[in-house]
Length: 131
Image (cartoon, rainbow, N blue to C red; front, side, top):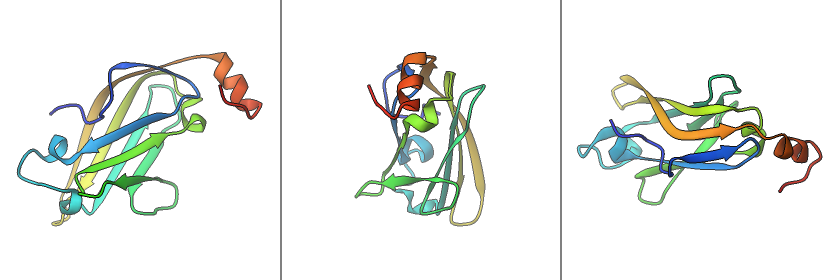
């Protein structure tokens, strides 16, 4: 399976925003044309020693929202500075999708993103400023 996140392999720093998107063709191949086949989509983004950021389609307590584009083929989301400030190392994704029949599949994905430690952004965040 191809990597699910749509951004270049690169290094981000603690305290950075990280935008991501997930295209249906990367999850389901060519047989399924939009996300309506999967009523439940849950995404976890994390590093080996960090806080886990949770995203889900719809509005759910404890989860950030995934945003569906107008043609229902791509979900997008954003890791915020508050989420990335405690992350360090390779960013990984775990994804759980439930189809219309109730069958659940899970996927583990290496994103190609590395989050580097930086005391500068952490300190700026603590002081309520962005750089």
